[in-house]
Length: 385
Image (cartoon, rainbow, N blue to C red):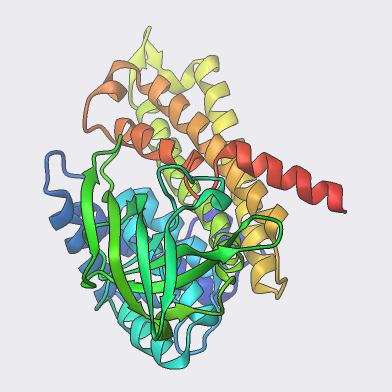
């Protein structure tokens, strides 16, 4: 069933509305039944969800393969529907896009054909290797190097907080290949197969919510020069283009979690009695529900404005995407917090839906640029206008 927002807003085509309904039904009836099981094997759970997504043909909406342009509205609709039921399924979906976007933009034709088709059909798991122990938001601090050696690049360094580390079949890796005249690093991008000698997952990191994350070391890892993505020095631009394309979709994932929290709060408030009447009949609860619904609508409007503008042909939607990511993730955190408050002690029980959402939402205010970084980006864009 299509929710009223998607039905009423003019952002969407009928095809996108039908996609949203199909994915929502798929998420509730298939994904949710196999996700977020307490104590379950994380890798096995991830692979099961990954296979479900591949069988449903959803990765083609995350991977810009075959010369197709990324449909950002469809990307956001799918992320919102998946995160409503499972943040792990949402991660499995979006990483196929994050790990392949630079390849679709700038890799040589045979490299594009090889990896993009495998990622789009679910025959290969993708990852995006940018963050390092000393380089998070400050991409210029990257220390991993790629030294040219004839027809090869020799990669040395380490990456941290890499989603899908240990599960991925290939990584889109960013490394220093020199230095600019102003002293800043010359960053380049590479496709690195997980089977390459010298590429080792050294640690799996346990996070606040189930999430396959780890650290990778590159020691004398020899990568064919033809697997460089674009020219030397294109790495920073490609990384920023990836963020620009996918940042609004982080807000969409937050909206999915917030929408689930609001639904759970409404269900609980209209069935639980306190002081002789339903929670929903208490004015303070009504105030919370009103604030939650208003913030959710505002967040979705910002998300789908950014997605629509990107699909309409704007090359850069930096400010719009940052506003969407900032507001939606912060608003979702507030909405989920209020949903837990409405549930009272029941919401604190490990494994409860709102307890899971409370843990799941926290990372979204950090990855793909913290809320603080989004504010700097938005202010920077304002000052340019």
